[in-house]
Length: 154
Image (tube, rainbow, N blue to C red):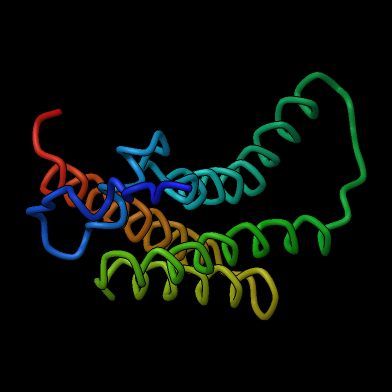
């Protein structure tokens, strides 16, 4: 039986700490992580759960249709998606090492949670969404620029 040489040992990776991702790409597994879209998706779902529901209720009301909405479940869904955004950004923080996007999203999550579960204030709620979106966008841009630095112009 012949020993098969591991292709990863013969390749010369010239980018810092990303040797593993380089080798995975060579072996047919892409370096694009599914977590790249989870934080923006969770942020969008939180926004849609809040403002999309308001828009739907307003539209239905204008058409003469009334619906009964359980506000506890509605607030819970908004906070759940905001919390999911924060959790995903915590995990992604380990990948790029930057605390600021996660801190922004954490402040947003806390503001949204306070507004939905403790004492509703529209300004606090809106500020929470601004912080949550800012953290998500900043994390996405860091991840995108890091990939460009590691892999260059492919």
